[in-house]
Image 1 (tube, rainbow, N blue to C red):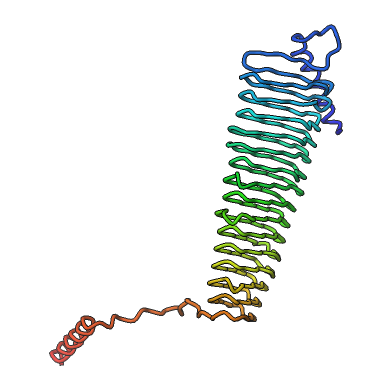
Image 2 (cartoon, rainbow, N blue to C red; image 1 turned 90 degrees about the horizontal axis):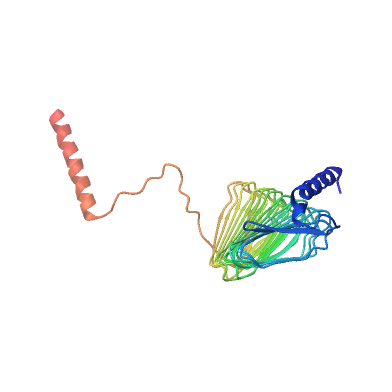
Length: 361
C-alpha cells in the first residue's frame, strides 16, 4: 500500500474512532462499530470480520477501513459500501440504489437493481454482475475485465486498458467508453463502443439488435456484427477485421482497412486516405466503395456494385453488375422540358424576338 494511502486510512480510523465509537462498547476491543442515526444504519469495520445484513427500509452504509469486509447483504432503500482497503469480494445488493466505491480488486459484486447500481473502482481490477430494470454503471481505472450486465441500461467507463463488458438480450442499451485495448460482447438492442486509444474488439451476435456501433479513434479495432445495422468508424485506420452479416453495414476508415467482409443487404466503405479492401458476398444487394485516397481493392459478388476511386490505382473483381457513378460534372444543368407546351412557349419567344429585331432594323 502506498504511504499516502496508509496515512489517509490511519487518519480516517482516528477520526471514526473519535466520532463513532461512543455508540459502541468503547471499553473493550471491537471489530466494528454499528449505529443507527436518523434514517441511516452505519457500520465502521476495522478488522474486516464484519458481515452486515441490512434489511431496513432506510439507508445502509458500510465502511471497510483496514481489511476487506466479510460481506454486505442489503435490500434497503439505499445501499453504500466504501471499501477503503480494497478487496471487498462479497456484496449482494437488491436496493433501489446500490453504490460501491472500491480502492482495488473488488469482485463477486452482485446487483439486482431497481433504479441504479454504481461501482467505482479507483485503481482497477474489479468485477461486477448486475440485472434488473434500472441503470448499471461501472467507472474503472483499468483491467475491469469481467463485467456482465443483464440490466436495462449498462455502461462501462474505463480510463485505462484491459476492460471487458458483456451485455445480454435483457438490456436495451449497452455502452463502453474505453482507452483500449478493451473488449465488448453485446446482445442488447443498441450497442455502442467508443475506443479512444485503439485496439478494441466489439462483437454483436444478436440478429434482433437494432444497432451495433464502434468508434475507434486511433485505429486497430475489430468488429463482428450480425445486428440489423452495423457501423464502424475507424479514423485512425488499420481496422483490419470488419465482418458483417446485418441488413446495413457501413465502415468509415482513415486508411488501411484491409478486410471488410460483408454479407448484408447494403454494404458501404469509405476510405479517405486509401489502401482499403472490401469483399461483398453474393447475398448483398448493393455494394458501394468510395476511395478518395486511391489504391483500394473491391471484390463484389453482390447484385449491384458501385465504386468511386478518385485517387486512382483501384482494382475491382467479382461477378456483380457495375453501376455507374451518380456524380455529375460541375456546371451540368438539367435539360428543358420536352412536352408540347414547352415547345410552343419557346416558339412564341423566338417569334417575339424576331419581330423586335425587324422593327429596330
